[in-house]
Length: 466
Image (cartoon, rainbow, N blue to C red; front, side, top):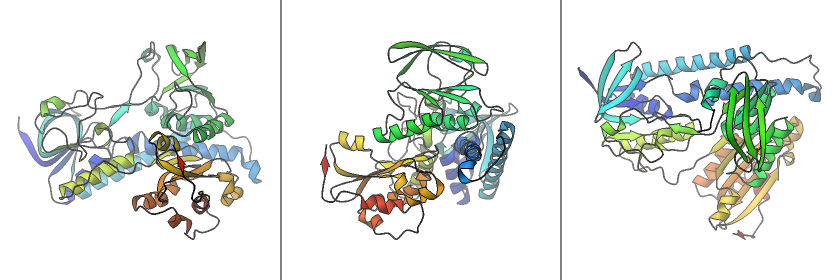
């Protein structure tokens, strides 16, 4: 069989993969991207953007139901999940069309099929029609992502549970959604489904939600969800599962040492992801994996095979689309002679509840565990005057400052919290003292002027030491 040769092959069309392909192709190289299913990767198709689209619809449902508080009278509120899904799918179709256009403009070839290594930098692709193509790249980039994994629980697979992929395509609101897991995906979809009118129960195995956040933040988030009518069960150990998701499901569990049956109509599993590295022939290409199934890379994202890189989720990078994009920039710059590395980089995060939870740097718990000296300032959202105009007074902002007045951590559980991050990140990246933010003149009344107030609340000359 003829082997087609390329300057670069990209296996997987995720965030970093597509950008490295477009970049190299526009520079004149012959580039092909091999993708099994999702043009543009999971973010525009089944993850980030579709979920935020659904969350936006759920937010409107809440606003309409609570409109009387704003002096607006409406009739009975009903939700059409068919219309909600139509809106989401129209967005996805538009994003796919945008990606196809970018492939055309860049000159990168998009090959739809299942790719598997057969030798060093050589991939055999089984096309949709069953026909094979064999392709070899001078350079190869892996961006095969990760998929939602199912824990090994008796009866779980027979119950045919949903992951976020299936839930985001539901044409009806579950009567009672049971959720295994209390992470970002679980909490975002729990709030959305509750706002659409369904009953929701979260089953989290840890003693509380968001175990990696500080207690004050986690308590605020839990209170929000409970106030919206979501049942939160923590310290849950599932023994077995029976029934069928979409009809009736029963979880036999132990909660705080007490046995209990938890019943619902639908089951969502949101307990983590597994790298999509199985059965793609990595061993034939000399590409090693870690014990957890990720592609083994160094801090330049180089694999154990010469001229092969791995980026994004499959390389064990922080599982955010923006971090995958940063992986692309690191590899791009290094190909041009740079020496950029993944160590020490900022990892911002945002949980898209309403209000949002955004964070950068260390939590107070992490700073204490590391024995760092720091000062802490907090600001309740009700202290932001903009909150009084919108009625969104729930939440708090939190800042950690080192003895030299630089910022070591920031968290915001507040409306539009993700939009606070760039200002704080810039100060942290440039090693600026928090006074640089405090001295800003920020328009009033905006949410972001809270940063000035927060910085002004930092204790002067007092350092807490773990």
